[in-house]
Length: 607
Image (cartoon, rainbow, N blue to C red; front, side, top):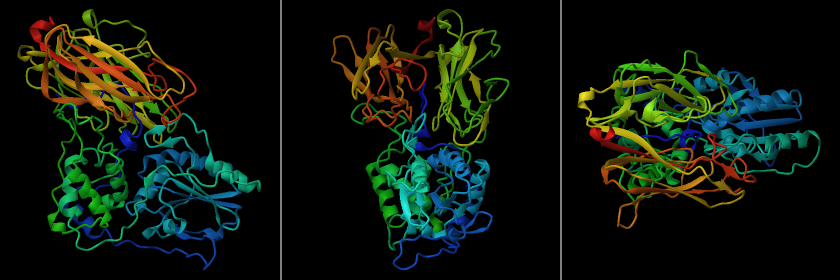
């Protein structure tokens, strides 16, 4: 069995990553040329502060080479926002900042500044065009201006009054954070600070903790470090990270290029230390899984040592070959490709998009056995997940509440960032009965630019005579619950009985924003229950599946039980509204309690 992702949505693809990488070397020769010149940067011109003054002035060029001096602007207020072209949270705030500049035109001058060593002028220009910005976007070579302001992350906002002294520093508002996208902001820190300065009133909140990406400063290199990018770090990244963090994939930046990786070194150390990346949430005390994505303690220590040593390059002759990935379909050439619809779906630049459902007739006049399936996003940057279900007759027939209301069907395949396609072992396959229709459930997460999506699924069929095991995606669920308002630890249970001998292949729990923990238990007749999977810190941003390293035989009469814990309190930063009780519902601001699992049964038993 492959790594599968359950029915769900998640923001920023894990700790916060969305959107394909913009620039990467296309060959090992380009790779080596790039790393050899990584430190040859034009440090530009920056005006230092007058001795003993709190006044801040700067002089920087934009991506076209036009020089901007803060002293040339006579507006009452200057707003400086440190931005990163690849930071997902920064992308989401671009249109907000442009609107504020338009609203305050003539009174306030906004500047965006990139101090990331990995942000090229090409990337700055692409960011400006993609987000249709008129705000000057300036490059800070050598991060001298960031050092002057004391900026640490992107996006981080500073308000300068008429004396050009800092009167506010911190977040723009509280709408977006790590893995959190609220429907709207509760606190508008930057807007309120600017209004206070313009109205000559006191700023109520003068600083806030910033949520975002660490600025990719030029790190002070130390000599004699045992760990280098060329030797150890590049190989570690190739093994664990490059599948997603490469050109055209979901990772927001490349991890194949030294200059890029060095710029993200601080952020890499942070997300690795906090176990936000790679995304894996199973308690190692229970179960062994074929797709375990964890880094070892030794690998984590190696990354931290490298960053603390200034992210040294090392001997470029030791650089490994960049991994090669297959172009096009990862499952091979499909026997059939089915598009979700005849027309693309237009994804807005911002806001929340409810699940979209598309019903397609693949034209099957006979039963089909599927041994491989791959869902391919059309607009990878904003397609959060795709689930394709089967709606048919007979045993597959379910209540029809309308195709646009639910995914009321048998599960065929799915994808989400980092998930491999469905590729079953020889003799294993899923059945799509004649006359069935395919239901595409699409979840989109706007990333700051308008996108057009036309996703599809590719199918490879098995010879019916070769199929020995039929694979079914089953579930235990409980839809009869109400989570009290403000409850930080509400338990919901569900169980299901296995009616025939089967092989257990994979487990994938599913909840929404208030999901806190999930546990699967196996109860065999006359035997004490066993923990199959324990997810003590459920992360809605990553809907991981957990593929058993060894298939588990389940005798008829076995029971699988699920225990879900929900956090509906204000302490859950992803909670849309802790003041309201929550019930079952399809949308992410509602809740679900589902424990999916894959079973394989003998083909003779499935008829």
